[in-house]
Structure formats: structure tokens, C-alpha cells
Image (spheres, helix red, strand yellow):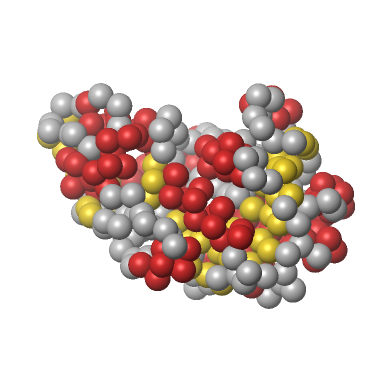
Length: 289
């Protein structure tokens, strides 16, 4: 098996390379020399820098591969990239290349909340990318995931900082989170790659859904938490988008983070013969005091 991974420099991509390289050869695809440099010490057999929307370049990189894992995605737009480009254009080029190369299977990481009629453009474009894959001639497994927590990643570092504060402010603390351990995502991808048939679209989340407020408490936060209405963040996001090409958050990003995640992934885990990591064990691994 030779596996091509797009977005390979992200925290999930790096972990996938580490584990997949033990049993397969890996071709890592990134979009900048800086990202490639971050993989210099990885176990990827090959690292290529290319434009994710360049069908011909992807086809050349994919020509010797049997499987592919498509990880490209964003939750915040900037002047450099938008949801349509990051999700739809890249997936369209990816699918064309995969069909030309006659891959055996594609694994795609989508997001909980993806829906073709979604008001949020991140969710809507993710659903459009899913549709491109499901209509392709290449068998595809799509995992819709929530917040992914792993040792040393951005989300876990943010949660750790929150846990150490005496006073914190958040938007709609009642919003439901259902975090999944990054190791479980990696194991799910590895298991899916070995299946004789694709699984279609599946929810892949952690075993516990709880409010953001309760997640902070479980992570060790014992201070005062002020919950602001989402509309305040939406107004702030509007002005930040006008003032900066790369604002700290946007209205669409807040919509993604505010999505209530509460799904049953039991069947997904059963089909993969996996057991999810419990929330307490997950937090013990990723939250730094």
C-alpha cells in the first residue's frame, strides 16, 4: 500500500505519517516550502510541495499511490484562502486526480455539522466536498469529526491555558462539545484503509458530549467563567473582518465552534473494531498543568 496524504503537515497528518509509515510507504503533500521543512524529519518516503487545486500536479504525485487521505480544510477564512477554495476547489482537483490514477480508496476528514443547506459556509462547503467524493468513481470513506484533541496541538494548548485561568470569557458556554482523541482519528483512518469496502459518510466523535462549560471544568478550570451571548461575538467578528486580513476569529469560525456536537458513533467504532478513548483519559493526556 502506498498512501498519499494532503495537508500532511497538520497535527493529524504528522501523526498519520508516523503510524502509516510502519506498514506502508507515504507520499506527503503540502502547499509551501515551510510546511515541507516541518516534515523534513518525518518518516514520509516523499514530500511534495504543490498547489492543492492543481489537478495535474496532484495526478503526478498520486500516480504511484494506491490510497489517499485528504486532510485539507480550514475553519477560518483569510485574505489568502476561503472556504470555497480550501474545501471545494481542492477536493474537485483531488477527485479528478484520483479517478485518473484509479485509486482503490479515499479517506476524507470532514466536520460535524456539514450539510448542503447549512447557513454556515464552512459547513456548507464541507458538504459540497463530501458530495464530490461520494459521486466519484473512487470508493470513499468520510469521517465527520468534532474538536480533535492531541498532545501538543493548538486546541489542547488552548484548553490547557483555559484550565489555568482564574477568570475566563467565552461565547455561549452551553454549546455542546464532543471532543475526540487524535489517536482515535489516526486509528480510524488506518483501520478504514484496510477495509475491503468504503464506509460512506460516518460520524466519528468521542464518547462524551457535554457543554463547553463542563468541558472546561473537566479539564481543571475552577475559576469564574463568564458566558457571553453569541451575537456579541458575531458583531465583534464583523468588525475584525473589516479591520484585518487575518482576524483572530470570524463570524463563520464562531458558527463552527458554536455547533452543538452530540452524535452516536457506536456503529462507526464497531465497524472499525475500535474502542474510543474516554474523555477523562483523553484530558489526562492532552491538558498540561
